[in-house]
Amino acid sequence: AQTVTQSQPEMSVQEAETVTLSCTYDTSESDYYLFWYKQPPSRQMILVIRQEAYKQQNATENRFSVNFQKAAKSFSLKISDSQLGDAAMYFCAYRSARGNFNKFYFGSGTKLNVKP
Amino acid sequence: NAGVTQTPKFQVLKTGQSMTLQCAQDMNHEYMSWYRQDPGMGLRLIHYSVGAGITDQGEVPNGYNVSRSTTEDFPLRLLSAAPSQTSVYFCASYRNSGNTIYFGEGSWLTVV
Image 1: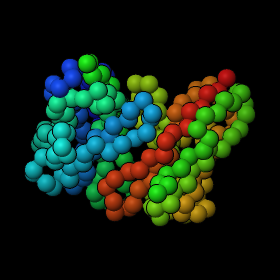
Image 2: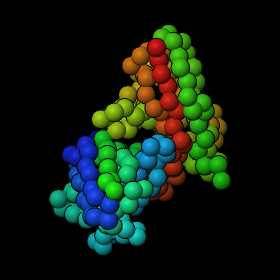
Image 3: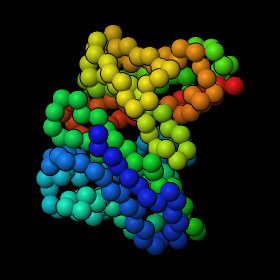
Image 4: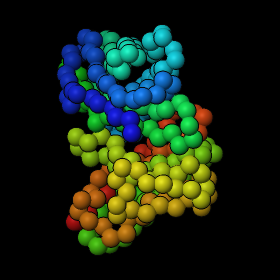
């Protein structure tokens, strides 16, 4: 089974600064999707950004961008101009793009604190 | 747009009691899953379904049963609740060909 590792249980950033959350994954597949989900205190899971493995260009969504290193199996999330509303748990996730029974695999999460 | 709806949102059970967490989606998704979330352990897959009448076990299936009689509904049954099942439970759905998973708002379960 695929594994997703988030090695930073908790991180802090000053408001308006930039922070990078790390994620590595283990897979033998070549075609897959990677995601970052945000979980605020309300506990609802919100999709932040996704990356298709076949795309070399890193995905960007406003202040959120990823650094996708396929050979290194690394998928980090960069949050620019951090805002108080960015404080949440962030989960990295993986899903195969092939086959019929494609489950999502999640990391253990990184808690992001944003200091005013 | 209802999306994925879970009930109840909060529940307290006594050890040994049984209960069912309900999950319904209105997006006609083939795949539905149940996860539990515990501190430091992220989201762990309990059971999943790839269509009506088809279910399979995830990482932590013991103590839970599921069924999928319709595309829309995927209830999770706790057969005999134990304190170790105290957790937050999430139902999710997605398309076979899609690449985004949709979550319900979560169900907080405490077993005393």
